[in-house]
Image: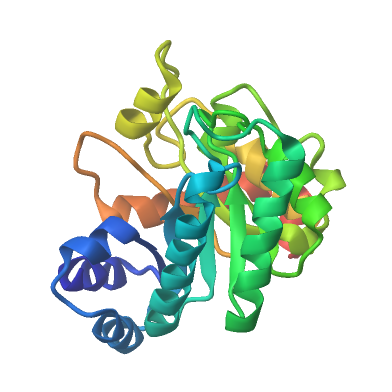
Length: 259
């Protein structure tokens, strides 16, 4: 973790997502990671992922809620106020919308005293929820200030979706944005995601249209790169890709230069 954070700051980024596996593998305590990030000028924007929650089998629900509380305590140590919850992939999870909503409502209620916000993300391979509009449907019904949705360009575009109906989602309910490009591949979407994501502009996904739609809506949150790739990628190239994407957005959408 210290080496990663130092490299990220040196490349010119001003914040990070932290992947829980990195914490588990690091001997450095969360409070020390927070102090190091502060010293490097990095904000810890988000901790992820919290998996397989909504619709969890009844016999596992208490255990899963206890696990969520441990995540909130960990986030307090990190100085982080956003937790990404990805849609359930467990075949045993409940397909019932009302059960999913009740679980997300319980999680949001737990998060509020911690001043933590939950970002709910529809995985492209989610068992019952794999489209952002499905995620928004559940979040809308919960109607909690502690719960919003995460928009991930890969998960949305890889299943042939788009942001044409983003006007249905209030701006304040878009809790986080993750960006990744990818070359078109005729393969299992999870394998495609895990091995072939790349920086914006290096693949075939319509990212300029994607970010332009968000810009027109008024989104001003951070642009985060979430890249999984079998090859080693340069952090400096990652920052350049975001700068170039912004330029292409401004050329594509003249209103972007006014923001």
